[in-house]
Length: 223
Image (cartoon, rainbow, N blue to C red; front, side):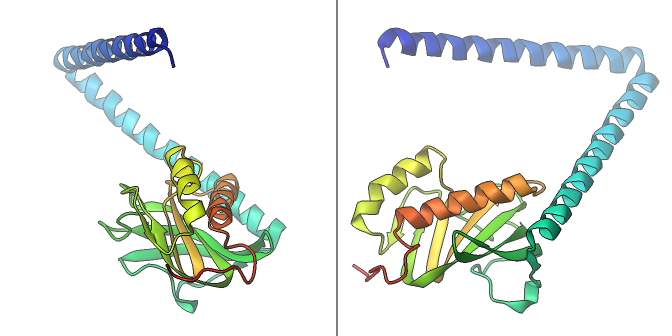
């Protein structure tokens, strides 16, 4: 990138910051004036706005639930009970709903989870709800992980380190953990939809491919 392009980018960012601040100040001043001049009307409008936001959120969530129900039926996904298996996390995490299916010839379990505090520390930075993907690997692998601290841990193949870092920084793969025969990822979102599940599964398999974990009999000896 040339110096001129960088200066142009900085100028655009600075202008955006200034204009954003001016717009915010204008909105706050207008709201303060309306609250002082028409207190009853302002309170009613604010309440209506909150109720509208709440209803719109419910409508979107119900639509997402219907989309997922159709996907489960059409694709033949099998529901998974939360207590029917062990999960690859130890923190305070609740499996809200989950399904098992096959992708790229390997068993996959994906679903919606909710957590508290730092139960998934390193996997996500904020939030309390999201989508998880667990891929059952064709053969056992040593413990490996790449979390938000940008630090590879475990017996990561040497030829995978640079591609993993590059893909993570570009947002092509999420934070991940490999433990024995499972590759585990978490994707933060409010509601899950079929398209989100498909994208999360694809991103998780990209990790498996970069680690050479998708072919039976790969050598994963610890370094």
